[in-house]
Every structure is written in structure tokens, then in C-alpha cells.
Length: 310
Ligand code: GLN
Image 1 (cartoon, rainbow, N blue to C red):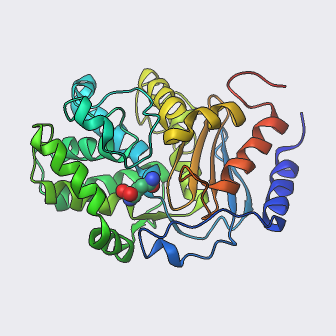
Image 2: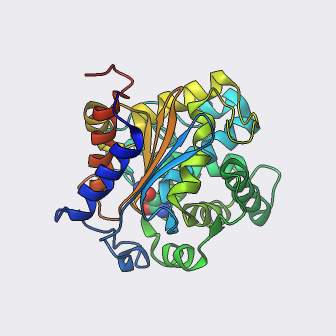
């Protein structure tokens, strides 16, 4: 088995030198300003240590990676009833697609596309004012990362609020079908702000650790969810975590993973590690271009694919 620290250092060096960096998302203007020449990889291990390469202390917008944590919270609140209002099948369409919503009576295909995450956010709002619900989400991220420095980037949230016409369409459409309980603007306000949570690669890798270790964060000893729930969240990440690029990600990387348009990917190596990669340039499906390549290198070198070593 190669030495993990050596592999991580080599990956960081290769990614720094590559010219193909993908394209940063510009539909949220604030994200369009991020320098594409950045890269970070952090691997949180079972003993609580983190092996790092690149800019692991730089904060980035986690965007849709937040959907893993909102799903975890909503399952805690609603249990399996959550699955009455959101499915768990891959969508095969873009992250912000509206097409299936009409055919499936406003029930989103899975919790990791925008429509699904908006339905999940509506669940978290039950019995709460928007501010409280958002506070709960932020505190949960700080708890799993074991770091109070995790914060909401208000400028990114405002930028998305100004330009979020597509998400407004999705939410209104679901509201028309009776799928959302709360006012559309409340749900979207919380949704835009949790997408705007800012973290470092080190924090994100730690935050995902409970998913790699049967629901328990090995660094703190805290049980976050049951082992069964962790396993199921990983299953949804594997099948749905990369939108219409989920099949390609499973084929190339072979791990449960969740991407965001800020260029982050959280990937889980069950029993071994939680990995955060970040590089802002995206591929055609809206997933980090170099992030995916870095994970492909990591799983191949370490034999970490859930489908077997090669
Ligand atoms: N906040 C983004 C949006 O709603 C999240 C999308 C993503 O990361 N894929 O469009």
C-alpha cells in the first residue's frame, strides 16, 4: 500500500501544474469572482488526523455539498416520512432541472438536486422561523466539523438571492403541487443561505467523518446518526451526488460523493476516510473538474473504490 501522505502530496503537485481547470460558475455572480487556480485536498482518517495537500485553510462556498448535511438533519427530524416528499432515484438531468417535477406531481427525484434540497429545507423549517432553521443548520455544520469558524458568507447568499430565478421557479412549482408547507420565500431564504456556508477543505473532511465511521465522528467520539442511517446517506450520495454526472463519478472514482458549484466535493471511503477536495473550475455537469480527477487518482492509488481495488 503506498504511503497516503506521499500520494496526497503528489496529487496536489499534479493539480497545481495542470492547465485544464474547468470553468467557474458565473450564474451566481459572486462565485464567478473566485480564482480558478486554487486546489485543496484533505483526507480525514479514523484516528482523527487529517492528511492535507494544497490550500486546506482557504474558505470556499460549499454550495450543494450542504445538501448532505440538510438531508441528515431532516432525516433526524422527520425520519423515513421524509421519503414521502422526496425520492431517492438518480435524476439523469441537470442539478436545477424542472422537467421531472411536472411528470412526478412536484415530488423531486432525490434530495441532492436543487428541487429535492428545497423540499428538504422545507422539512427543516417545520416549527421554526427561518432564522432559527438556518441557525440550526449552521450549528450542525460547526458541530460535525468540530469548528465554530464555519460561517455563512452573506455576500454569496445575497448574490444568489438576486439571481435565483430558476430556484424560485422550482419552489413555486412544488408549492403549486402542495409539496411545500411553508412560504416559498422563507424556504428559499434558508436554502440560499445554507448553500452559502463557507468552509475549508480541512473542516469539510472532518464534517463528513461520521459518514465514514458508521455515524460516529472518530475525532470527537460524538454519535451523529445511527450506522444504518450513515449507510443509507452514503447510498444516496453514490447514486445521486453528482447529478447527471453520478454514473461517471461512480465509474471513475467509485465512492459516495457530493459536489457543489463552488467546486467542492465530499467523498466517503467507508470505514477508512472522509475526503474533501476543492477546485473552483467545473465540468459540463457542474462538478469540480480537478476535484474529480484528484479523487480518481486517490482511489486508484490507495485501492479505495467501494467496488474493489485494482
Ligand atoms: N446554490 C446553488 C443553486 O441553487 C447550488 C447548486 C449546486 O451547487 N449545484 O443553484
